[in-house]
Length: 279
Image (cartoon, rainbow, N blue to C red; front, side, top):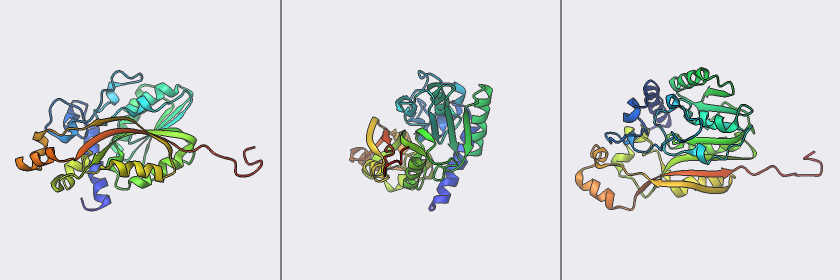
């Protein structure tokens, strides 16, 4: 897992496997929610079931937040979901946009795209579209989206800065994003940083919280707001696969923290550069 391509291949393989399972099966898969803690994948997801537009068949138990709950989506908006999986956030976004809006889900795992398209077709959602592609180079034109959402995906992408550049490109002037993701404060033990399962499990690919927010501000976004933050606790039975008992104690007593944050930011509205340019 030393190259960016190897990391992408790992994620594509893991999420391809997840796409073929249901939520129960994914309780042992990446970022899924479960009472058991046999894998790191089980411990991050929030409960979607109270949100309007929720469909259980599209919920694979993935994610680390509820970005669509905070995304300020309005009727008629065009929404892009990065790492759309089986369509969970897209269908909730569709409830907010109504039939006059449009939702585009982007995912680079073919099995996820296939499953999401089946879910949309089953429900007759003609204004929800799923496109296979890399969110570092989105298969959409510039200035198309009112809102961008994403749930626990950017930590899986090697080139996070390019993703934020792409988000800026595809948002309309005055548009905004709401993204849930994993960030760090402090340094993870080396054995966790190097573990492939911890990368696919949304932990070791995370960057420092301060660096994450700096990527947003340095790419011209404004009004940056943390809408929600929660600490992620990794149980000892997971850590024991990578750390000795004494190393676990040392990790617990360190200042290292793993957090899920939901971040909001805006692309500045267009301004006139000369008389008549806004006509």
